[in-house]
Image (cartoon, rainbow, N blue to C red; front, side, top):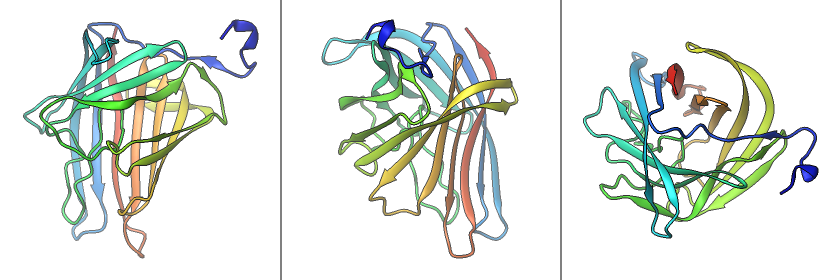
Length: 226
Protein backbone atom coordinates (compact mmCIF):
# COMPACT_ATOMS: atom_id res chain seq x y z
CA UNK A 1 0.00 0.00 0.00
CA UNK A 2 1.43 3.33 -1.01
CA UNK A 3 1.98 6.17 1.41
CA UNK A 4 -0.79 8.16 -0.30
CA UNK A 5 -3.28 5.54 0.98
CA UNK A 6 -2.08 5.68 4.57
CA UNK A 7 -4.62 6.74 7.18
CA UNK A 8 -3.72 10.05 8.78
CA UNK A 9 -3.95 8.53 12.26
CA UNK A 10 -1.96 5.37 11.45
CA UNK A 11 1.46 4.58 12.84
CA UNK A 12 3.60 2.48 10.48
CA UNK A 13 4.69 -0.28 12.82
CA UNK A 14 7.62 -2.64 12.51
CA UNK A 15 8.70 -5.04 15.27
CA UNK A 16 12.46 -4.63 15.98
CA UNK A 17 13.74 -7.97 14.67
CA UNK A 18 17.49 -7.47 14.98
CA UNK A 19 19.52 -10.63 15.49
CA UNK A 20 21.16 -10.38 18.91
CA UNK A 21 18.48 -8.18 20.44
CA UNK A 22 17.65 -8.96 24.05
CA UNK A 23 14.62 -8.33 26.25
CA UNK A 24 14.34 -9.04 29.97
CA UNK A 25 10.98 -9.00 31.74
CA UNK A 26 9.78 -9.10 35.31
CA UNK A 27 6.93 -11.62 35.56
CA UNK A 28 4.36 -11.45 38.35
CA UNK A 29 1.74 -14.14 38.89
CA UNK A 30 -1.01 -13.82 41.50
CA UNK A 31 -3.95 -15.92 42.64
CA UNK A 32 -6.35 -14.30 45.10
CA UNK A 33 -8.86 -17.17 44.98
CA UNK A 34 -6.93 -19.33 47.46
CA UNK A 35 -6.04 -18.94 51.11
CA UNK A 36 -3.46 -17.67 51.60
CA UNK A 37 -3.27 -15.70 48.33
CA UNK A 38 -0.37 -16.70 46.11
CA UNK A 39 2.32 -14.48 44.61
CA UNK A 40 5.11 -15.71 42.32
CA UNK A 41 7.77 -13.34 40.90
CA UNK A 42 9.83 -14.62 38.00
CA UNK A 43 12.09 -13.36 35.21
CA UNK A 44 11.67 -13.97 31.48
CA UNK A 45 14.62 -13.43 29.10
CA UNK A 46 14.15 -13.28 25.32
CA UNK A 47 16.77 -13.33 22.55
CA UNK A 48 16.35 -12.70 18.80
CA UNK A 49 18.28 -15.37 16.92
CA UNK A 50 19.23 -16.08 13.31
CA UNK A 51 16.32 -16.66 10.92
CA UNK A 52 15.11 -20.09 9.84
CA UNK A 53 12.80 -21.05 7.00
CA UNK A 54 9.17 -21.95 7.51
CA UNK A 55 7.69 -24.95 5.64
CA UNK A 56 6.51 -22.49 2.97
CA UNK A 57 10.06 -21.16 2.54
CA UNK A 58 9.52 -17.85 4.33
CA UNK A 59 12.41 -16.52 6.40
CA UNK A 60 11.40 -15.98 10.01
CA UNK A 61 13.36 -14.71 12.98
CA UNK A 62 13.59 -16.99 16.02
CA UNK A 63 12.64 -15.48 19.37
CA UNK A 64 13.97 -17.71 22.14
CA UNK A 65 12.80 -17.21 25.71
CA UNK A 66 13.34 -18.73 29.11
CA UNK A 67 11.66 -18.29 32.48
CA UNK A 68 14.04 -18.53 35.42
CA UNK A 69 11.73 -21.11 37.00
CA UNK A 70 11.77 -23.45 33.97
CA UNK A 71 14.41 -25.75 32.59
CA UNK A 72 13.43 -25.60 28.89
CA UNK A 73 13.47 -22.77 26.38
CA UNK A 74 10.41 -21.70 24.41
CA UNK A 75 10.43 -20.32 20.89
CA UNK A 76 8.36 -18.10 18.61
CA UNK A 77 8.99 -17.87 14.85
CA UNK A 78 8.10 -14.41 13.56
CA UNK A 79 8.42 -12.10 10.56
CA UNK A 80 7.71 -8.52 9.49
CA UNK A 81 5.64 -8.71 6.31
CA UNK A 82 4.56 -5.81 4.14
CA UNK A 83 1.20 -5.57 5.94
CA UNK A 84 2.35 -6.29 9.49
CA UNK A 85 4.16 -8.32 12.11
CA UNK A 86 3.27 -12.02 12.10
CA UNK A 87 3.78 -15.15 14.19
CA UNK A 88 4.34 -18.18 11.95
CA UNK A 89 4.92 -20.87 14.56
CA UNK A 90 5.99 -21.72 18.08
CA UNK A 91 7.57 -24.37 20.25
CA UNK A 92 6.61 -24.29 23.91
CA UNK A 93 7.95 -27.25 25.83
CA UNK A 94 7.27 -25.89 29.30
CA UNK A 95 6.33 -22.42 28.07
CA UNK A 96 3.07 -21.51 29.76
CA UNK A 97 1.53 -19.72 32.67
CA UNK A 98 2.78 -22.02 35.40
CA UNK A 99 -0.40 -23.23 37.14
CA UNK A 100 -1.05 -21.76 40.54
CA UNK A 101 -2.99 -23.78 43.08
CA UNK A 102 -6.67 -23.93 42.16
CA UNK A 103 -6.23 -22.81 38.52
CA UNK A 104 -6.09 -24.49 35.14
CA UNK A 105 -2.85 -24.90 33.22
CA UNK A 106 -3.14 -22.02 30.74
CA UNK A 107 -0.56 -21.98 27.96
CA UNK A 108 0.66 -18.91 26.11
CA UNK A 109 3.44 -18.39 23.59
CA UNK A 110 6.18 -15.78 23.97
CA UNK A 111 3.95 -13.20 22.27
CA UNK A 112 0.97 -14.07 24.45
CA UNK A 113 -1.00 -16.21 21.99
CA UNK A 114 -3.26 -18.74 23.79
CA UNK A 115 -2.60 -22.23 22.41
CA UNK A 116 -3.65 -25.82 23.12
CA UNK A 117 -0.50 -27.86 22.88
CA UNK A 118 2.70 -28.06 24.88
CA UNK A 119 4.73 -29.72 22.14
CA UNK A 120 8.36 -30.72 21.78
CA UNK A 121 8.27 -30.00 18.04
CA UNK A 122 7.61 -26.77 16.18
CA UNK A 123 3.93 -26.07 15.60
CA UNK A 124 3.41 -23.98 12.45
CA UNK A 125 0.18 -22.01 12.26
CA UNK A 126 -1.98 -23.12 9.29
CA UNK A 127 -2.08 -19.42 8.40
CA UNK A 128 0.41 -16.94 9.91
CA UNK A 129 -1.17 -15.03 12.81
CA UNK A 130 -1.09 -11.24 12.57
CA UNK A 131 0.30 -9.73 15.79
CA UNK A 132 0.44 -6.06 14.81
CA UNK A 133 -0.66 -4.47 11.52
CA UNK A 134 1.79 -2.28 9.62
CA UNK A 135 -0.83 0.49 9.68
CA UNK A 136 -1.63 0.54 13.39
CA UNK A 137 -4.44 2.83 14.54
CA UNK A 138 -7.17 3.00 17.17
CA UNK A 139 -10.18 0.90 16.15
CA UNK A 140 -8.28 -1.57 13.98
CA UNK A 141 -9.84 -5.04 14.40
CA UNK A 142 -8.91 -8.47 13.08
CA UNK A 143 -9.77 -12.09 13.85
CA UNK A 144 -8.05 -15.46 13.74
CA UNK A 145 -9.48 -18.97 13.65
CA UNK A 146 -7.48 -22.18 13.94
CA UNK A 147 -7.60 -25.45 15.85
CA UNK A 148 -4.07 -24.63 17.05
CA UNK A 149 -5.11 -21.77 19.33
CA UNK A 150 -7.25 -22.03 22.49
CA UNK A 151 -10.06 -21.64 22.02
CA UNK A 152 -10.20 -21.92 18.23
CA UNK A 153 -11.29 -18.31 17.65
CA UNK A 154 -9.86 -14.99 18.84
CA UNK A 155 -10.34 -11.31 18.12
CA UNK A 156 -7.76 -8.51 18.33
CA UNK A 157 -8.64 -4.87 18.94
CA UNK A 158 -6.27 -1.90 18.84
CA UNK A 159 -7.17 0.74 21.39
CA UNK A 160 -6.00 4.29 21.83
CA UNK A 161 -2.24 4.69 22.19
CA UNK A 162 -1.20 5.59 25.72
CA UNK A 163 1.81 6.23 27.91
CA UNK A 164 2.81 3.00 29.62
CA UNK A 165 5.23 2.93 32.52
CA UNK A 166 7.30 -0.19 33.20
CA UNK A 167 10.56 -0.68 35.14
CA UNK A 168 12.55 -0.08 31.92
CA UNK A 169 10.95 3.33 31.37
CA UNK A 170 7.88 5.12 30.01
CA UNK A 171 6.86 4.97 26.36
CA UNK A 172 3.86 5.52 24.09
CA UNK A 173 2.39 2.11 23.29
CA UNK A 174 -0.20 0.56 21.01
CA UNK A 175 -2.63 -1.34 23.23
CA UNK A 176 -3.83 -4.61 21.70
CA UNK A 177 -6.77 -6.21 23.48
CA UNK A 178 -7.27 -9.94 22.90
CA UNK A 179 -10.66 -11.63 23.16
CA UNK A 180 -11.11 -15.41 23.17
CA UNK A 181 -14.42 -16.87 21.96
CA UNK A 182 -16.04 -20.07 23.21
CA UNK A 183 -13.57 -20.47 26.07
CA UNK A 184 -14.55 -22.93 28.79
CA UNK A 185 -12.36 -21.22 31.38
CA UNK A 186 -13.37 -17.93 33.07
CA UNK A 187 -13.25 -14.90 30.83
CA UNK A 188 -10.06 -12.86 31.02
CA UNK A 189 -8.83 -9.41 30.13
CA UNK A 190 -5.72 -9.82 28.00
CA UNK A 191 -3.68 -6.85 26.74
CA UNK A 192 -0.35 -6.52 24.92
CA UNK A 193 1.51 -3.20 24.73
CA UNK A 194 3.60 -2.72 21.58
CA UNK A 195 6.24 -0.02 21.09
CA UNK A 196 9.25 0.62 18.85
CA UNK A 197 11.34 -1.62 21.14
CA UNK A 198 8.83 -4.48 20.98
CA UNK A 199 6.34 -5.60 23.60
CA UNK A 200 6.97 -3.73 26.86
CA UNK A 201 4.07 -5.20 28.81
CA UNK A 202 1.64 -8.10 28.61
CA UNK A 203 -1.17 -8.78 31.08
CA UNK A 204 -3.72 -11.51 31.74
CA UNK A 205 -6.32 -10.91 34.47
CA UNK A 206 -9.22 -13.31 35.04
CA UNK A 207 -12.08 -13.13 37.56
CA UNK A 208 -12.47 -16.74 38.67
CA UNK A 209 -15.48 -16.77 41.02
CA UNK A 210 -18.53 -14.87 42.24
CA UNK A 211 -16.45 -13.17 44.94
CA UNK A 212 -14.48 -11.41 42.17
CA UNK A 213 -11.22 -13.12 43.11
CA UNK A 214 -8.64 -12.88 40.35
CA UNK A 215 -5.80 -14.81 38.79
CA UNK A 216 -3.25 -12.67 36.95
CA UNK A 217 -0.07 -13.04 34.93
CA UNK A 218 1.77 -9.83 34.07
CA UNK A 219 5.19 -9.22 32.60
CA UNK A 220 6.89 -5.87 32.26
CA UNK A 221 10.10 -4.86 30.49
CA UNK A 222 13.17 -4.53 32.70
CA UNK A 223 15.90 -4.30 30.07
CA UNK A 224 16.26 -4.00 26.29
CA UNK A 225 19.40 -4.23 24.16
CA UNK A 226 19.41 -3.90 20.39
